[in-house]
Image (tube, rainbow, N blue to C red; front, side, top):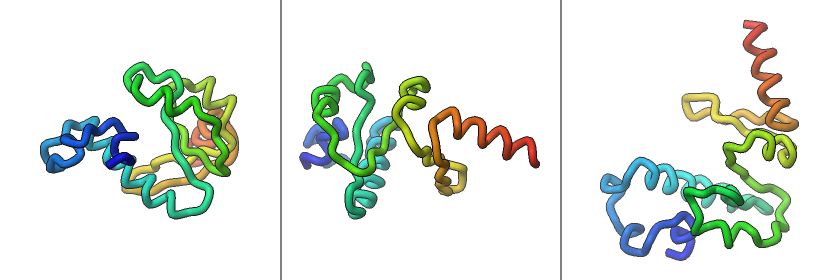
Length: 118
């Protein structure tokens, strides 16, 4: 239950049938499931945007020091991503994930080069 609280589910909402969840709640549930599977790998963890106004309840938890070898970060702030990421894992459709080394801009440039070769 405490794990689902990290994804902003109240105990009552966490016990609700999936069909009754909103689109955003379903997305958070999918992320919780994904991170549960990933956490079985040593050194994997998760965090939320430090400045995400829509998830103000998680900001305090996200300001703790991070001592992990892998952090999955989701942000709308592209400059922030360029400054902190060393690898991008992108959803390529049909459930396929693809890994790209480098920053967010490196990923954009790689995608552009790949598109120009088609």
